[in-house]
Length: 322
Image: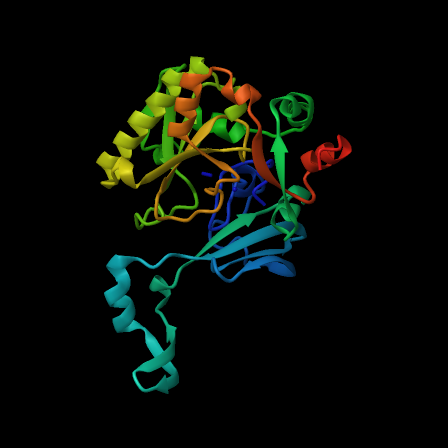
């Protein structure tokens, strides 16, 4: 499902590059189901990430702005033998026991995940443009006086979330649902996970309640909801994918990538962007903190990263907080 890591435009997520809901662009524009980028004309490279084997590009598709993300798909254990047997190798260098080659894999084993946003908004384009990142420390008072008014003034649509909860979209992707209106949630794979291997397992739990925007809204009243997500989410993942709770990282983002409470379930060995200490809050820690103090997240200072062009960063600057 899925997150700069400022995450104000839409969906998770994240991460490998984070791709949020607005980025997935499920409802905007009609494109060819066969090749939506056949007419793509490159304008510029927004960001290149060699380490993550991904690139973000801006261009035009039939006179409409478009952002395309290209990501090399992870290697799959079940196809390694076929990959080595059927690929063509071109020797580059050989010295004693060491040799390097250019390996040309057959098309079916050389996939590149392609995410298309068209028509792309200025928010999409800015989101993937490389920018400076600042780490802010937000007190409870800062949240009430700066962040919450900013969030309320923006049009951050979560209609795509409601479409999932109402089974108007992605119903076939839901792997578990607890329909309880207060403690219930749906669990489904994040779009960053291709579900072909468990090393980069990534699922999202989206709560049915619509009155909880983020970590800041949580109190002891929500402990039943949170413990329900943890127990049933972990149980579902163990039964369906064979991954025990000890191999899962279960956490919130703050700031979140979209303002409807959701929980991330990722494989511990998957070093997904957004899982660092500056943004991720373990669900188990959140539960314990609320058990000790119902107003913990109303009052405690929280840090999070923002990109240079983020409107919230400007609010903090104007208030002399940076």
